[in-house]
Image (cartoon, rainbow, N blue to C red; front, side, top):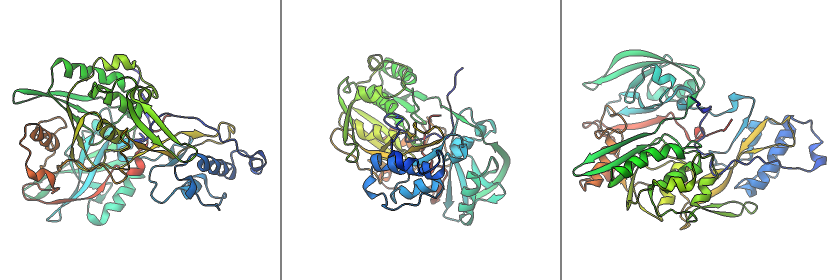
Length: 456
């Protein structure tokens, strides 16, 4: 079975991949040896001056004697968390996260009585964490001999990012006390593309389709057809799309999902607008153009044969929802009612190119700068601070966490309450209540700078 291996899955590689060489002035390029830090930095500068979204804010004076990684960072505007430089033959330059290294995500949360622990939110299939027996809802009280505490949060996050093995202490919450259960050791290993999770849920006399997507990897379209054929064959009346942990990926795959959600998105229908600097200009893509920009394994017409014709879609989100996942939310709105439930999204409303120096084989660096801001066809975008849900719901409102797709799971249960008209006003305010126990989030294992999908 062919599997697509990926190092760090870049939740933001959108649009299409372009290999471009900035042909800089020959006299300048000959100043430094090919592949040297100065030559690489000079190429980075010329490329960024042409394509970077904030090219007009690049410093006029730069220090070419820095390491390429540090030099690239010096070119970025203060609030740019997403542009990154990678050395192709050095995996150590690829941003990593707990999810990509070990196959799970966690949040460090603190209870009102000062109990602090890391809560496992999700575990990837076919991952080291899964093989070690880690499950969603597990409570971690120790990581690599560090107790999980407010004072140790920064040390824990640093230890996790720099480790190849995690030694975890697992506990359970009993009578407001943490009781040790077992120890787990998780080894770092590559992650694979994740399977879809789809279900048909019975609610009263209606049927609702539920679809959970971990990310938008390239070539996803073909895998989406089967669940949507099932949804269509079962005559579902409602669709719940769970993007709570989806950090993005391919816009082509996100466009494929949108085309399946509503039959209003036909070939030629305007879908997405990219706005760049004076060199990039404005680019408008129809739904089929956006779809065609990826490595899909099905035609657009064949995809549309399984499209639904529902008036509304319910989308579950969190602070981990980003990039192409946010495109789904924002760019469906002109065509279908979108009811968002959960927490505010991350806020990555930008697209990146892949840029490499094809004129200099000795230069092994590849850069992924933010090149475009993304809008829908109504010119609505600018959600850098995240997209607010219509109904706020707290994933940690009930512990232990239930499996994704369970009707008892907090966010899915909230969506079902909205569908049946039973949603109460407490969905509109965020309160980490677990039987009168209040929590606050101290740290997240999946950080914005790790939202990267890099094709190797």
